[in-house]
Length: 199
Image (tube, rainbow, N blue to C red; front, side, top):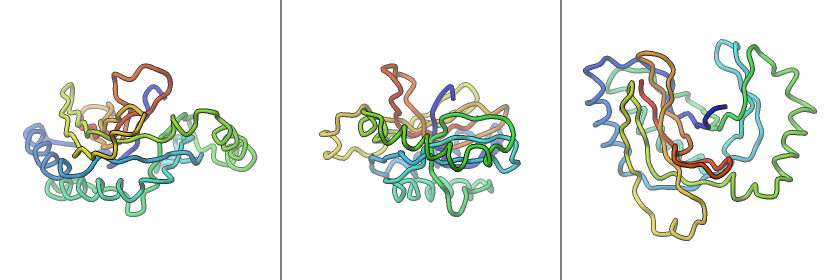
């Protein structure tokens, strides 16, 4: 993957005159949410709905409730604009790699166990796989809109850099919410905050 992300919404199409009202509604909903920590350390195999791509991802094992809270706010905004809401029972995850086609049979089983062993034995896994969110970033076309999450004093003690929420390009008119690394992060494979991307 060129960039890590964690999805908070499905891809949707926004009319041009909806963009600013949509972002404003998103800010009003999300800005009250607290920054939070999460851990993604369980290797899992995913496919898209069409089964045309397979992904190897790290599933969230702590912080699930906070992501559900964020999604509930995003879903309310989606409903206001008559857009598709997120999955009812989401498996929040960070995709690490993908391939064309449905490769679940080849990857599940022994391969999946070996990948999990690598993650479990990685010496810096506690530092790299435990991260916290600081903002939601919304991308529409070539424009970015940031929504800081509320600051919690207890996060001051965390040694990990902040994360940001933002979106990636999926073609004209496409929009997807997800959690992704901050663009300014450059020291190794450190994951950073969540973001919503609206194109």
